Length: 376
Image (tube, rainbow, N blue to C red):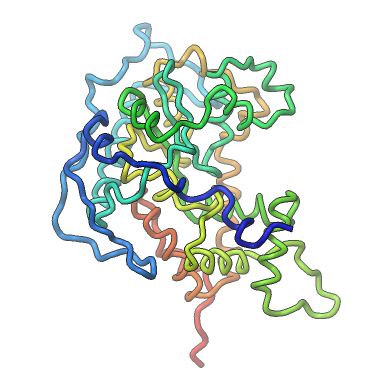
């Protein structure tokens, strides 16, 4: 059986040994960046440093003259969801949101002095120079949908993708091999680069339910067994049903322990700030799950890929990109977080708080879900 360390390090936060070439990246990126900040903001215990008061210059925002115009006939093409219609108003709203997200992200990066701190993780990028597009794949954040799009860009037909049993990521990597750090540096300044983010704890819960709850996958079953062995403190009462895999609480205790030991995280729950390194790479666009359909069409139109990608999603796959799955997870949040106490929540936030801040999500609400200490 693989060792606990080997299992828990699968996927890695940051590819070791990759040269970031930070100065070159900063000089060549499309919108530029205000200065290089090398101060280490993470202390020995992994806590974020106090924000600095001085504001730094962020990258320039997108400008109207850079945007591609909608078709001159004014037609509204049906997009990913057959009910959803794109419009000039939605295009303008998307542009406003993208600008605000970039501004917020670079404020937080500058405040915590982590611009350039994490080497770019080229390993997780899909780059298509011929289509002028680069995507950092964040697992459990609409990754299946954009993997499908990249397979179309790679030349696979819709019919083939519908019937094949091959893994979508294996298909995509045949056409879009993992780039080196130098290749990422060369391509990023000439492409529309983007990532899709999700509320950090919704993504975390989604990963737990998909990979560890019930332990259906062979690899994650082994990891789950070792989490249970190390973190299960009590045994069920006689006659009580024993969980097949680790409970949500046990999973979070494993994350905290693994983080503090300096372990590398699985890609499904690795924090975005170290996985896609948005404080080291000047992403053109930051999309969100909450506005996924609109944001995806905006990206597609900016890249001029309407003909290739719009309306190419099969009906059964189109269900993936509605808000149904995300809303299901969101509705389960109170039930799962009721399993833990304030201390464990605070410990987990030590890992993910920066993701909350970078992308404008609220973490304080979770204290209303967890168990409060009994001082009686």
